[in-house]
Length: 291
Image (tube, rainbow, N blue to C red):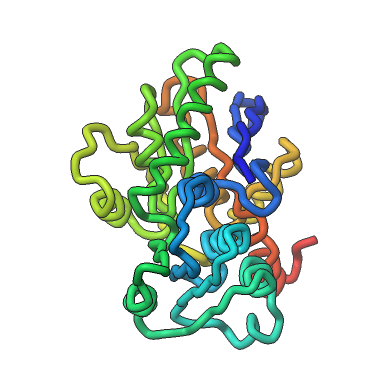
């Protein structure tokens, strides 16, 4: 399998023009920022490896992408998380469900990172949570090259990129390889969290992405009515479905700041739509009013 150049589309939302880089359309099972982060492992040979190990949350987008990668490579896939709700065990859904179907072996442990690295040896490849590692630069640089070409072909003057961040590694490497500004926002922690993630992979970056903030503090994974409302509005007005965990918070923070930003916005769609299955179910259980 080889990743192809993803679509680049022009849309209007709330009377503003946006260009959207559709990395959600890269491949049905291997798409978004996780496909970019793990492309290095996809295209290179690892003749001595027979097992892939990683760790993170029980509905991680990275977890699902890694299980697909392992299946393509013929590797076993072992994953560590700190808990699996009994409801999820009894009613598998979303990334958890599809990763299990793809042969993932998942274990709940107190220290998931320590357990993952305890298995590291000459035949086992350990991937950091969310792809927070130097090898991610390979695929993200290719994404930056695509964006430069897309922007040139569409004659966009004074462009800038926006994307919401988990670990922030995609934003970091895009800024490293693009001549124009990259804006992001934190969805997992605060600004210091993002800066710490960046320092873990690059200690000499001259230009960092600019972090946008919101008047309201949002907590990772928590359900917000306004987040689902903007998800529906985006889908209805642009015909594009976004991830329900990161993108709504990203769009809320982006739109709060957009009037202060100069230029033409390019929004990076990072996939993660399989996770919407579980997120929609959570919204339904909480609010009981989602169609």
